[in-house]
Image (spheres, rainbow over the protein chains, first blue to last red):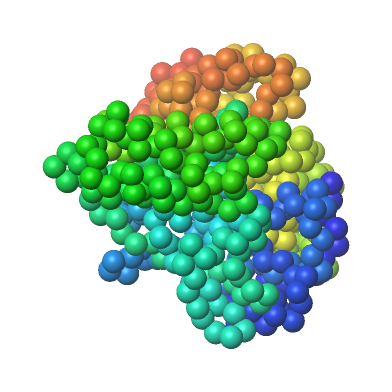
Length: 283
Length: 183
């Protein structure tokens, strides 16, 4: 279908974009458009105006900030997958991004758009949560930083206030950690029924620290705190890891929908967390 | 209405478009380039795939205004000097289509795949084309066609001059560079 009518602007500066958004609560931000355009086509969204960030300089690209890697909100999935800094310091993000949709969508879709859209079945929010990323936001009141644990508020809802634009995501470098993103979906390019973002740090054959974020196990991504605790100090071996993963669904309140019932999702979360951690730990 | 300047299949256009117009509608209805079909309208099927600055994009998921200042290649821009692109020829020769509806998107997605990976395995071809659906169950022959075209393009690139191409089709080497010309 043809989208409903809207005003279209392509401001040259962030300040101008914020001004337009602050003056109109029904305005929508357009980044790569791979989530927004389907919503417009299905007429699930009818914004009065669409603010295209595409002409604003400085929102795209990856930078080394010492202990962090800063990824501009307009950096495409394709660029994330091929970026050497991300490969070196945030491999989990690259691996999960490689599973997003298909090549044509990854050429256009952006990391900022995926995060701000906050679909619980999207792969990247769980990664941001597991990596304790920070979301850099600019709005009418200036700049602020939102931790991943506070950014995802509800189904398709983030901590972004009216007039605010997500400008970048800062990801702490987890050098020396190993990782794996395990995704369970029905067909190629389908959304995750459940996904697990796992990272572990090993010392002398034991797991000293683990991070686990779950995709599509609730209205927001879920940090699996119980598993993270259960992993601390265990041998990096399959038996111990799968035992620890039995509490993977403890913090989750998964939905029942056409893809899966809640109890099946709980089962998947436990099994896939075990697999993700075992792969991450190389066991 | 916003004004856009785009290059489509090597021709520059300066047009007014409605902001809500999708790129695929602009191509079909304003430029008459109906070689790009509208398939699912849900971003799933990939039938409307074009190259946008050399990278595959689903033209139902791009606003025409977003294409302002960019270069677009559709299936109609692939043949050069009256000769098909090696992928077009390979799809024909390997019976990689039945109804043909998915074919323009398949071929443009395959061009994008070979740009990144000139010698893909069958598995890599299937992954590279995962955003393109064929409902005539023709995937086996599509994979064979892409593999054959990849070999032809590699052979043409390796040949010192067009005449020396190892390819049985004399025009192959001359047609091959159009793959490189798109970005």
